[in-house]
Amino acid sequence: MRILTLSLLVVLAACVRQPPLPPLNEPAIEEKAFLTKDGQRLPLHRWLPDGEPKAVIVALHGFNDYGRFIEPAAQFFRRHGIAVYSYDQRGFGAAPHRGRWAGTSTYVDDLSTFIRLLHGRHPHIPLYVLGESMGGAVAIVAASRGLVDGDGLILAAPAVWARWTMPWYQRTALWLGDHLIPWVRLSGSGLGILASDNLDMLRALGRDPLVIKKTRIDAIAGLVDLMDQAQAAAPRLRLPTLYLYGGNDQVVPKEPTLAFLRRVDARKVRLVWYDEAYHMLLRDLAARHYWRDILSWIRSPDEALPSGADRALPPSLALTNSEP
Image 1 (cartoon, rainbow, N blue to C red):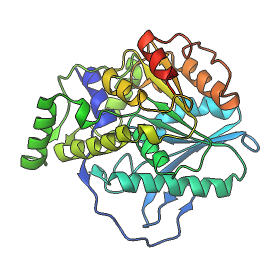
Image 2 (image 1 turned 30 degrees about the vertical axis):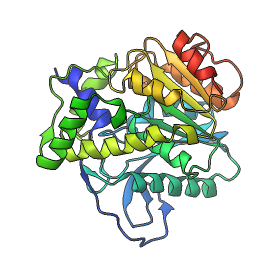
Image 3 (image 1 turned 45 degrees about the vertical axis):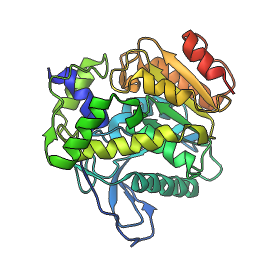
């Protein structure tokens, strides 16, 4: 069924690798575009409160998705005085080279550049990077390299499913496909994966022409390269981090998530486990509860969250999150 199989594609599938381009322009934030250092115009989306914002969020979408993924949550944050900016990352949405993978370093560099530009636009305002799935992986790698000049990370089911956490047969199939038939596009039909309990939202994604539906095998390999680096970056994560994960996540498995959490500095990472949430938890039917937790953490990072999901952790996760 289309609804059941769209999830993996929305989050974990992309395209051919784009060649790096030389710097050509002074980067800038325009009215409807983020102009990158190499002259690419990435579609820009923003939700601004009335008056000076109390905080700024940079939202990074998941694979095959695009910048408007954050719109329902952004409207909520805007009403509470927080500005939200999001752009279509290269190869996604209406960005140039649709369906082509730009490479981890390029995505990381774009994020770092965009953050610098926002600091110029909103000086002395706290800034947070919110990354969903692949966007979370980009944020993790960027932060581990010291390229996120911000006050914290908000990771919504980040893509940390590295090769070494996959069964051997999956690694072998990926290697063979990448080397023998990299041009073949996969739709994910028949996988039976449900990304959210919000079926109306999933149907809308299925109709949205800006959401990529079929993915080249070599693109999946590029995504796994990113997830390898995100998983390896766990010990180098130094920014205050709110890590959101759902007990019903069928896209990024629990095992690699636990492997990541066991290697972070628990003094920096606050884990929030929602038993009923799915992978696309920011758009689940109960998403408003998760938005409130994010807002609470931004306002008072040391206080208990409204949902209580940071306190009622399964024993294995509570132990993981309490280790120094």
